[in-house]
Length: 305
Image (cartoon, rainbow, N blue to C red; front, side, top):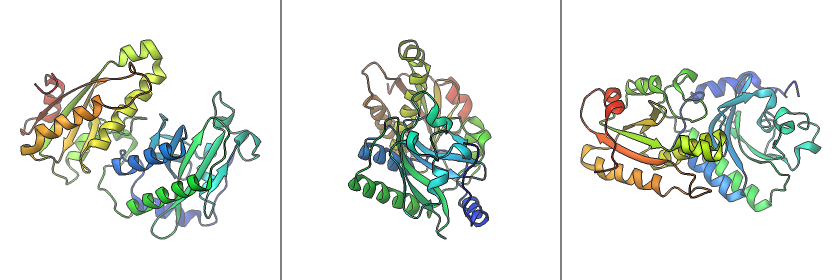
């Protein structure tokens, strides 16, 4: 598959996408909640919220996958944006548009896909809200209606833009969170963050040795997704070392200990596919004006002693 369809209004569509200022921003819980709900409702292996850029497909939210972007030529969603209502592919190996696509031909490749076009407030198709699986299947009318309803909620959220730093160089690839440079940029974005929480997630080496590197990487992403869903809406999450993450928080100091305890509880109770497939969370917090990055790298984390 060497090319992809181009909408007649491509220039206007790309202008609309740029005006959203959403490309290369960190994942947000408001979108993660919707992709998580769609994956669980449909029972699909993957769910993604993607935006179709000039030559790439970029993912704002993913469930079940460790991917930040793909070439547009590989994107099923590049076809969805041409659809008025939806694009459904029961078995990609039987569809001339996709059967030679590398993501189909690869071992364990995509077989089933269902996408709903996402529009900006001017009606331009800028992306897709989709589910996919590695087994052929049909989508029931009830599931299609649920997917369409959740896609409408995505469009509603797009009308409430967030003031987030943009740039690939600010993000941890595949994890949807900022790196240290991204966190530093967030601190100058205009939002006040009176509190900081450091989260250490130990056990990645043991998971890798037992289940493999791919399972360990996906578990780390899903753990961060769980953490993000428990954060306050304007809080920002970033990685500062292989096992340590920093939350820039809007939580007032008077509620910080209770908030941190709740975050730890959410991580400890996170559902996993196997009882041993889990990372151990340890958290510490501060409301002092000290250097956040030095503190986050040096802070002792002993749960909430």
